[in-house]
Amino acid sequence: MPFGKYKGTLLCDLPVYYLEWLHNKGFPPGKLGMTLSTVFEIKTNGVTGLLMQVKQYVQQQKSDR
Image 1 (spheres, rainbow, N blue to C red):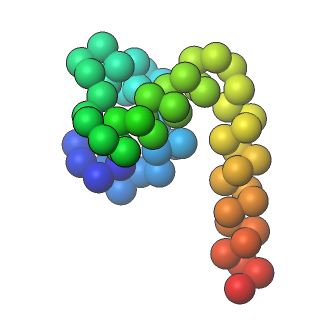
Image 2 (image 1 turned 90 degrees about the vertical axis):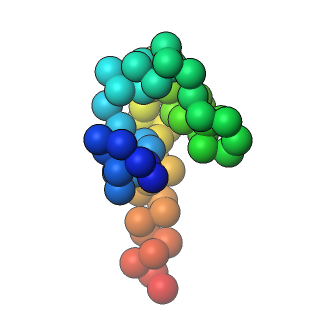
Protein backbone atom coordinates (compact mmCIF):
# COMPACT_ATOMS: atom_id res chain seq x y z
CA MET A 1 0.00 0.00 0.00
CA PRO A 2 1.63 3.26 -1.06
CA PHE A 3 -0.12 5.58 1.43
CA GLY A 4 -2.11 5.87 4.63
CA LYS A 5 -2.23 3.82 7.79
CA TYR A 6 -1.08 0.65 5.99
CA LYS A 7 1.70 2.20 3.92
CA GLY A 8 4.20 -0.51 2.95
CA THR A 9 1.73 -3.38 3.49
CA LEU A 10 1.09 -5.83 0.66
CA LEU A 11 -2.39 -5.24 -0.74
CA CYS A 12 -3.31 -8.88 -0.13
CA ASP A 13 -2.46 -8.40 3.56
CA LEU A 14 -4.79 -5.43 4.10
CA PRO A 15 -7.57 -6.14 6.59
CA VAL A 16 -11.10 -6.52 5.22
CA TYR A 17 -12.44 -3.66 7.35
CA TYR A 18 -9.94 -1.28 5.70
CA LEU A 19 -10.88 -2.50 2.23
CA GLU A 20 -14.55 -2.01 3.12
CA TRP A 21 -13.80 1.53 4.25
CA LEU A 22 -11.97 2.25 0.99
CA HIS A 23 -14.83 0.69 -0.97
CA ASN A 24 -17.35 2.97 0.74
CA LYS A 25 -15.11 6.02 0.33
CA GLY A 26 -14.22 5.18 -3.26
CA PHE A 27 -11.12 3.41 -4.48
CA PRO A 28 -8.43 5.65 -5.98
CA PRO A 29 -8.35 5.91 -9.78
CA GLY A 30 -6.09 3.84 -11.99
CA LYS A 31 -4.28 0.58 -11.49
CA LEU A 32 -4.11 0.88 -7.70
CA GLY A 33 -7.87 1.36 -7.42
CA MET A 34 -8.53 -1.58 -9.74
CA THR A 35 -6.20 -3.80 -7.76
CA LEU A 36 -7.70 -2.75 -4.42
CA SER A 37 -11.17 -3.44 -5.81
CA THR A 38 -10.06 -6.91 -6.92
CA VAL A 39 -8.54 -7.70 -3.51
CA PHE A 40 -11.74 -6.45 -1.86
CA GLU A 41 -13.89 -8.76 -4.02
CA ILE A 42 -11.62 -11.74 -3.38
CA LYS A 43 -11.60 -11.23 0.37
CA THR A 44 -15.31 -10.48 0.75
CA ASN A 45 -16.32 -13.47 -1.39
CA GLY A 46 -14.36 -15.98 0.67
CA VAL A 47 -11.63 -16.91 -1.77
CA THR A 48 -8.71 -15.58 0.24
CA GLY A 49 -7.01 -18.95 -0.22
CA LEU A 50 -6.40 -17.89 -3.82
CA LEU A 51 -4.40 -14.89 -2.63
CA MET A 52 -2.38 -17.06 -0.27
CA GLN A 53 -1.50 -19.48 -3.08
CA VAL A 54 -0.32 -16.64 -5.31
CA LYS A 55 1.68 -15.12 -2.46
CA GLN A 56 3.36 -18.46 -1.69
CA TYR A 57 4.17 -18.97 -5.38
CA VAL A 58 5.77 -15.53 -5.68
CA GLN A 59 7.80 -16.06 -2.49
CA GLN A 60 8.98 -19.43 -3.80
CA GLN A 61 10.02 -17.89 -7.11
CA LYS A 62 12.04 -15.24 -5.27
CA SER A 63 13.81 -17.83 -3.11
CA ASP A 64 14.68 -19.98 -6.15
CA ARG A 65 16.71 -17.14 -7.71
